[in-house]
Length: 212
Image (tube, rainbow, N blue to C red; front, top):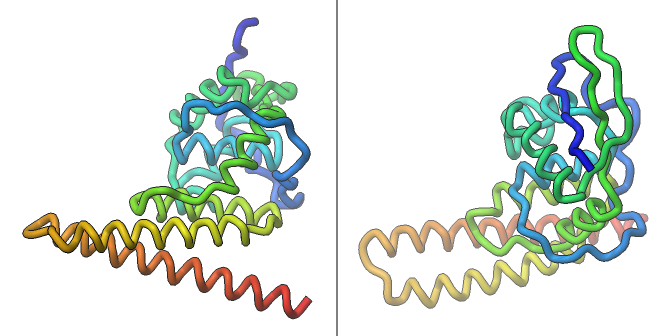
């Protein structure tokens, strides 16, 4: 079956601010392990789980001033290439077309059931590497917040992962010298700061649940 061309028309409104994002955690079939997605690919897929859209609203959301782009910016050309990648992998599908007053007809895309299952699993998984805390962990938290999802289980798992990373870094630090020592100390402090951030989120969540 030929892959439809995804138009990159420049007009059209951003993802509607009048309608709240649709919940991502819906009943979905399990999805087999696939090649990992990049933060930008996860962002596009998660946005399409919330609401179907053509490329231009996604470009605006993922631009430097967009809600998601402030965490992980994706250039326009990369957004459209990502749509092609997700389409080829069966994670999104065409959901219709939309006329454009200033260009060709645009293809509207939506997440497939497999795409929703992949995002559900991704949001539940802790981040494995210190270098990914600023990007992947924040993306997961923001997408969960946008959809009203409880991330307590993921945060607990993330705290355990951070404790393991901290222990490993401490072991390596005992034998490190020179620039290796400086790098390890930086990574160790980054890990500790992330642990404090996660602990604070867990405490705030517990406090909100007690007030309900």
